[in-house]
Image (tube, rainbow, N blue to C red; front, side):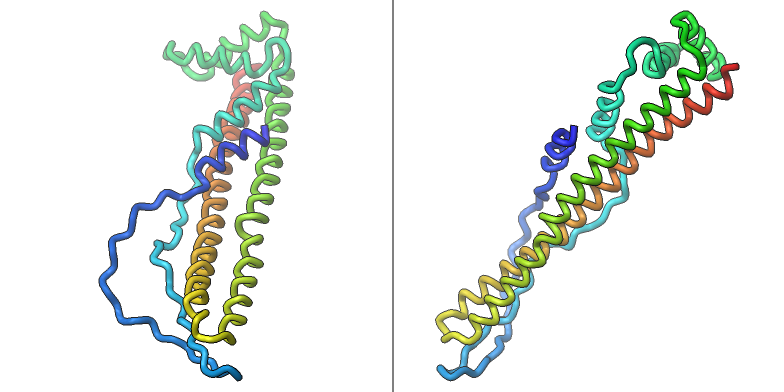
Length: 230
């Protein structure tokens, strides 16, 4: 199932951006001059990349994530009539217009026919809550790996590029073009790091929002069973 989570999230890891309008001509960027034994070396100033800063969005329920959690519950389905079948009976009765207590009591009548007790229903919900908790741990492990490669792992790349820039500054002027390109690449990686961090935070927020809905439903039904069924 962790593979399902990974493949799902990676589908949207590459941000889609509209082409930026062509900027008006600007004066040449200022340069830094470093003296060396070979003479002065001109170092181009860093050129900021023209990409909008990542914008955080609040956690929202994700239908695909909800399906992953629901599939996890279904895969762990306890044989025979349990909460899942009880829930299905409730869903089938939702169009009858019955008051909620009556619906739960009628659904429990079906459970009693299958010789299922109220205690067994509550225990089944507790079991499925543990399934969701286990799935949350899988998601946390996935996010930790993603952060290691897409956020923390980029720090060394940025540092390495900075070292190359400083080394190139001691060379003759013919290397200035290469230094300018590395500046741009460094800025692109820094922006990519920020975007990756934002994407991970958005995915985490969406997962937590989705999980909250699923867990809320489970806990709500548990409470209602406990209240309505005597």
